Amino acid sequence: MIREHGGLLFLHLTPVASIRGAMRRLVASFDPPPDALDYQRFETRGFLVFLPPGIRPPREVQVRVRGRVRRRVEAFWNGLAFVL
Image (cartoon, rainbow, N blue to C red):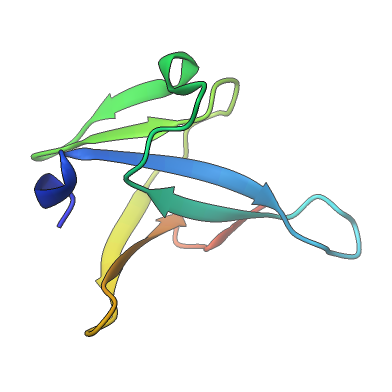
């Protein structure tokens, strides 16, 4: 699915309301953000993954396709949908 959308996957971190305020949700997108040229680039099998600048890369990013009618890509940071 990533290759069908141009072979680029952008990962964004969005703030989430939490008790400590330090939790962020990982969001995957095929659309480049306005500051995409600043993103860190990582090559994988068959596509490129982009992470926001200044963020230490995870040991592992897992990607899966969800949905039958409205297919979408979800990403997991070291096995989690949230980043602390």
